[in-house]
Image (cartoon, rainbow, N blue to C red; front, side, top):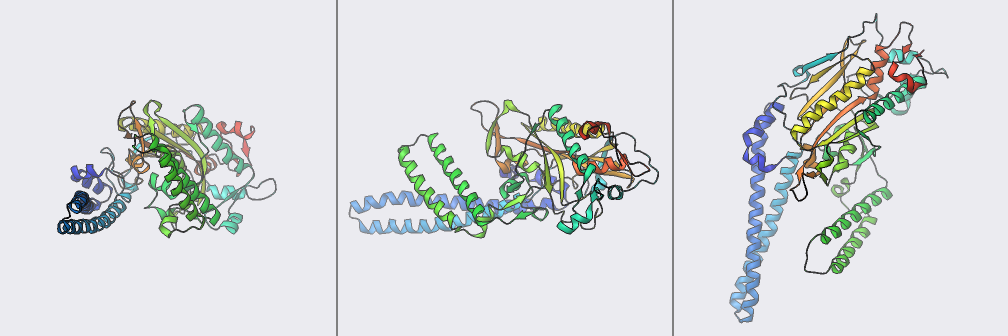
Length: 496
């Protein structure tokens, strides 16, 4: 989300930034202003009517005490009219807010000034290269190499046929030593990122609620890329029950931190009564589709989602920054809009493994420094595997929606005679933090500010396996195991 006050004060800056993303997108500022104006008018009308209601309600009693029934009737009419205005203005406020939130939730982040102009990958700018591409005579595709390799039981080590029979297109079953190499790559990456680069390893949930995906920006705009699951009734009840209990526990805690005139035991009695009523309603799932959708579960498209949401709804201590997290997880993507692209092999699967990197920092200056560091941490994996790569600065139109600046790392694939993306590292500013309400205090008593977030791949494990297979292929169809992986593979030097 965005600071609506900043859009009011600097509409031209937002208009120009969104036009850099996509020509004409900046025109949305006019709609934002219209809905914001309607929202503020509704709020003002409601407040004015509430004032009229409150002032005249007090006078009614006085008029009745003076037996001035005519005046009392006049005041009661004013109060009744004010109540109608309050109700109408409340409906207008809710409608305007919903329209405004829908627009703001669907808009991409503002690119930094140094991000180059462009609408697609043609506008990306190469920053550097490392390593010399290996010249291999008649290089084979990783899928051909993997399918030809047999496991000890005589099956293809890269088994697409069996995976298709059970799951459909864009799935693979790795067997034997290729399965071990995939595991070895993930372990190597995690050891490097935790042991040398200071990331804390996390084993996060793979199923998350929609609000977690809203927080990191995948929802509502990219719902088509996600896999959802149908929750059984008992699990829905458990989810809603846990939410209700959490909500009321927070209410009780908040009341204890404030100075109120009434007694805390009376508050507890009232809240417990309300809690009981809501828990009873939860047992029968007496909710509409919109309410139930709040508890829908989806498979994570990347560990960026649970890792970044570790700080949602919190006020952090700035002295702990930067926070750095890493996780190795399966990732699930429907790959909407990629029909016909990379249909062969492991480049674009619905399920793949990735080692994710996430950082939480204080401000833009720290964020940009952390972006360089994070990208370097991802590059180190490729260097130690001796895989040639290049770093690309993405243009405004090719960046992810949540990013302000992004570097892609592209690894050399001999069979395609080109570089292909293997990591994407992005600085997001406070874009995600505003959606998650993740804040920090510079010092005790200071006003909370939104944190800044970053995420990157360190690396995509499946694509790294592809790069190793292709760059380390031998003429006899075997694969040489890179030196960095041999300790993770029991000293194995060749997969044959």
